[in-house]
Length: 293
Image (tube, rainbow, N blue to C red; front, side):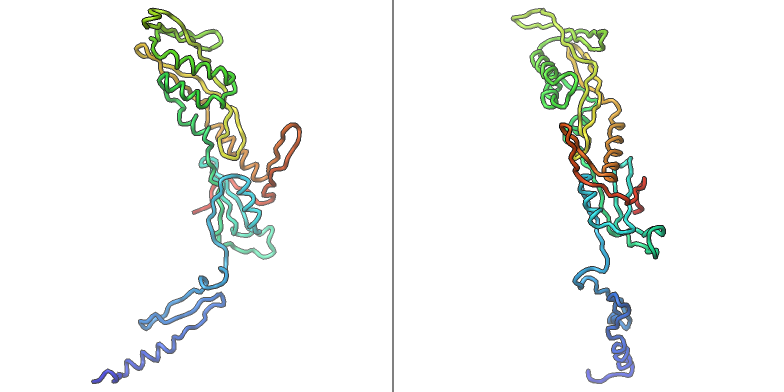
């Protein structure tokens, strides 16, 4: 038998392949093609078009103004927003299901076009947050105050610089005791033992609490938060730090205010003059929770 010899089975297979020539099965660009094994497969030509048949994308922005701008640019009848406080997450599903209350004909959405607000904490907040509850050596504590004194409202920054300089100048002293005054402030008593000042005693006063002005999220509002000073006397040395008072409350409040900004827009006021920064998303509904994954 030569290569040109064809059996009845070969002929039947060839006729079958011819019968499965490309055939449009849907006007959206779906075709039925032979798979080479006597069967057929569906081919979607969407990737070869000048534009996709429906929008898809998962965008990420980092501030409320950008989130609002994106939603307002792409919003549809079914667009909806989900805000989740515990994860500080806001997600808009641009192509969600259209509401039966607003649409003449109910249309389900693909739910493949989203934008997420990924809030970023400010450098100042991260600095205080990372140091929260940590006890530093004198030098470390003084350096921290040197770096962050401008964040402090009360006492005035100059007082914080003075405290930092005092600790830097008294690294070779033995701390012996502490006294809590009626105001709540603390005096740390020390004895300086150097060749020039043998046995000289003194004290350093630190406030019981400080008030800090911090912006939790980049682009968001500034809030006041209190911190309590902490200290430990250990074998003549002192370790110092602070404890933020309920920072989670400030974070929750900051998130709530950002969601309000998304809904209503933002107006800044300076020197009695109001400036409209951006509008909100208006009647786009905002739900508490997260869209299903």
